[in-house]
Image (cartoon, rainbow, N blue to C red; front, side, top):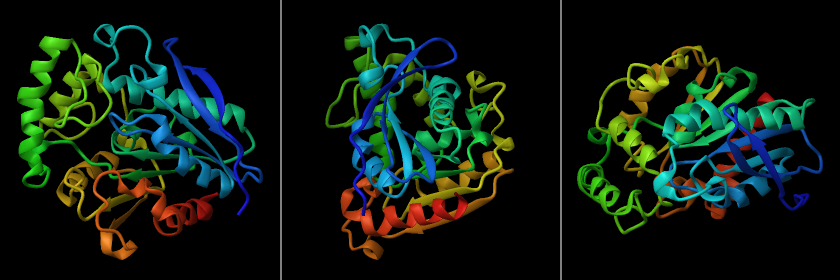
Amino acid sequence: MISAAEPQPVPFTAADGRRLAGLLVHALRPRGALVINNATGYLRGFYLRFARYAAERGYHTLIYDYRGMGASRSGLLRAERARMSDWGRLDMPAALDFLMGACPALPAFTLGHSVGGQLIGAMDNANRARAHVMIAASTGYWRRQSVPFRYAALAFWKLYGPLTLRTHGYVPRSPLWRGQPLPPGVFLQWRAWCLSPTEYGPALDDALDGTHFERVRGPLLVWGFTDDPIATPAAIDALLPSYAGAQVERRSTAPGEVGARGLGHHGFFAQAHRESLWRAAFDWLDQRA
């Protein structure tokens, strides 16, 4: 296998002028270009090993941080005005536009983890990508999550998050929230979405007005994991009507199928699955490249 080059820092700008911090991992024998859109609370570094594998498979790969997170954060977190909808309406389209501009002769794809898959329909340029992969993407409505996780989630939405917003002005890391610290607007919007059973899209939030989830054409690979307490079958089922126009292929993998004790919400990205889950994902992309 050909080794990927070291990642190149690549700043780029969203439509509202917000500067975002990316890393571009170059393929030595390119056949496509891939944007990785993060899950909530995950930074670009979490996806670096996967991006290097993608480059080895022939995909120039962009990883980056959303506004208000990691290397794209500026200023005090309590003063950050970013919302989760901004990630889908502004940051994700900017990442795809940047990559397509950098690699104009190559077919482009996205791979979204959790909210990075949910929000494909908020991108005004989603159909410029040849196909999309959703990893552990679903609605966040707490009642569709598994027991006992759903009760910890409810405590996060009702108690921990509001309390820390009052005391810190943002949501810090803790045993109840193991992700990166969240800006106030991101938490509050995410909380509203996860406390509502409304279909994902404009009906859920006025901030998503003008988005067109139903216009995403796919192909769309929707991949869930049997031990994921968040993206349960019921939660994935609830998301898919928002993508009624896409050519959906759905997969579900149990940990034992890949020799793992657990996969959960983020285990797909463990390097131990390089020759199983990662290979299968890129075999699917290769067929569309």
